[in-house]
Length: 298
Ligand code: NAD
Image (cartoon, rainbow, N blue to C red; front, top):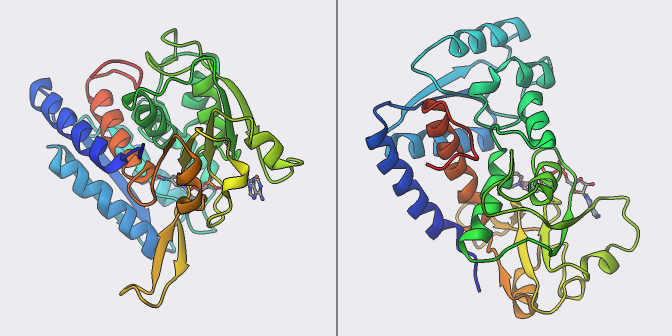
């Protein structure tokens, strides 16, 4: 089974647009881009377009690369105070003169639709309601919509980043449907692996569900995957390819062709986890406009 994130995103974005029309509020998302990193430029553009299609207000804040810490904090405070803005997203990476941790913490936790604020990560850790980080949230939706339950399963996550691996581990570990836990995801037995894990294949071969968030092109091979396992590939890596007009192609962290032969279900790259991330950002922004959190039904 191919876990098609593009198709599911289309359906969920229609649901978000529908719920927006019925909500009586116009959700507003402000994206802040500092500098001119081309990849960030393209990510922010796709978030803005998705917002507009869903009927949101999309406020596009672009600041020069030499913006100071104090100037950026002022912009964020201004957006925190506005009633028509329900989500504030600061695109990373930030230029080196900026302290990213301070900036992340300066966003109002109740407008932190990215789910990276220490308060929201704390809520997740404690099992309280809050905003869930979009990529892990999207992964849980992709699995549950395919009828793949993690309850009682051995889930192995390769990668311990704050963006993906750590919050996803907490979401899979949460008591399903209680407190900060999602209605349809949780109660798994979770193992998190990283660059210092000894004998990685011995661990990954025990996975009923294997999530790869490593950032190394096609690192996970078929001999690391159990027959019939579900494989979620979070990686988005550019590899040179002179046959492509842009001179590169996108591949995941998983050697797709060989692993797909063995897996019971797998996400493609592109078209798997990637589109779900933007979709859950829309979802969180709508919930914020309705004074709700990620765990609340639309
Ligand atoms: P990161 O660099 O912050 O973390 C990578 C993790 O992989 C680290 O925890 C590290 O310990 C682990 N790792 C590195 N080498 C390893 C090895 N040899 N064996 C085992 N573990 C190893 O990366 P990240 O931000 O979590 O992103 C990971 C990948 O996911 C990247 O390709 C990134 O582009 C992609 N990503 C995609 C989305 C999306 O929307 N689909 C969102 C975020 C990140």
